[in-house]
Image (cartoon, rainbow over all chains, first blue to last red; front, side, top):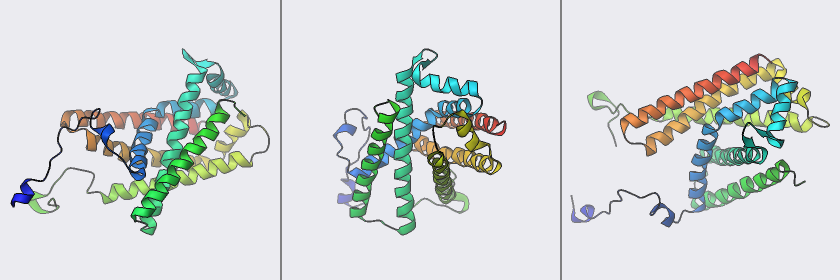
Length: 143
Length: 121
């Protein structure tokens, strides 16, 4: 091994709380890590998603329970908290879907350049956050 | 480059990539298609959407068949993605194995529940 190769810096024991916030991620990096986080959120909330499917399609009575969960609450969880969880799912789905389409497009069209990576990442963030804001306003009855 | 053949073949990881990589993309495309189909039916419905119209979307036979396929596709998609997360961040073998088994039980339970709801419609 050459002297130069030996001196290659090693990054070990990266602290998630003190080191990670100092990293300056580009837009594509933010989209990438959010793709992971949004996927994990939906994975953890999967039983709630299946519950929403179950209660909304099974019967008139269960449908009433489904709508009541958002207006009145679900068990000890108040309605606005149920809405907040639903909003998290809405954002996670939108971000995951749009970032996923970006991936598929890049795979299919070999659209791999620094410029396209950045511009498409910005478009992904603007679209997912914009649509989340619009649907969230609807969910909380702002219009 | 790790050795991918012979007696020194590396036998850990995500099936050497391609199969799961492709499965993740094909299932993703199916989920997008399903999203568009459901969204189109919701948007093309006239008037307020109550129980009848919402449940009606999923009660036709072709829609049940598509939804069933999407449930399977989604399970596969989530399995590939979540296992990637465990493989990237969780190094102790015991913890990783536990999380992978938990992921399987979690996913198969949800899948069974969703299929039950769908086919009794």
